[in-house]
Length: 477
Image (cartoon, rainbow, N blue to C red; front, side, top):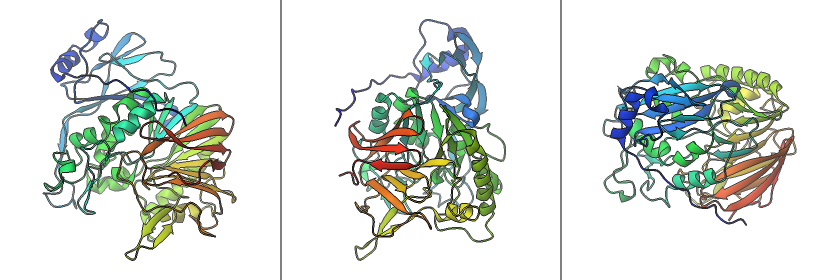
């Protein structure tokens, strides 16, 4: 078992100096010394359709800063201005929900292929390599504050909420790319006075909760590599969708697709799949499943038609590479576990809504050229491989959010299946452990998959070849 990675440094911040630097903009871009970014600042690179790279900066300032690309300065474009969004219709009672305040500008700049260096206010941004061979996979990273479930994670305790440690360890692995499989935001309701572990935590859907849940603890990993940002159900329009569209989605922000007006949610809760080339005849296929239903849809639900259209788009996109890795939030081919009042444990399968929509077009559920699926939603790590012609399923929903603690079995019961017709060949899991997953390409269709804990210690290894996968440990303990 390898030793933990070395510790990573942190940086100071001063907002007043930052605002002065933003106002001076391009004239300061070439200076030898720039003030460090302030606390209301985040910078990162997100990859979108066809692998297009977009530099993003979130900043509390009067105007967007300049971006310096290969020594040349240019203004960044305003994606979304500062605003406070009213409580959405159907939101919980006022004491449990409030308007979403976004006091930061969201700024962006498309990055041309071949750029050698990019920085904003003296902070370097990571650039995509010609071929991404080292990939970090994380998911379900926020700190859970949910009144409905009486679920109040101890956000102030780095042991109980370890996303910052997970992100720092993943950054020290030096990835070429980070894939987040969705659910970034969990601080939905106010922490009760009788819960000291989360006392004083920001809550709601505004910038303060987003910063505490994602941008602050994830800072080391945001600086380490470009990201692919899948959307989870916590980023649906009724929840943190406004922040997702402002901050993370790689597409242009369009009126009607910003979750501001509930009447537009049919559009705001859906976006077409897109492909991100990895080089070497491999690509990611990213699917927005934020509005699916794990219980399944009514026969007349509009979402069925949307997801059937997504299937057709996925199938078309999969023709663009020899090796295809699907990325979505809710696992289609994974397992979860429930414990009833008597203590009996039962298994449940993959997302019924997606199985219903995709299964109407293909009884095998996914386009035949998809080799592996990366998902989250279930708060654990899991691998499933099949003797039937289904892609391997990996679940990486174990990177910060309070874990699912009902254990999955070391060996599945005879005939257990996550979906009709799916015959399990190999199964591995880790329940109640925080960490991240990595994929390192060995060539062609062969990948080494490693499961790491929060400290950067390897806990399991798997070999992925084509659509088949097998892990060294059936159950991490």
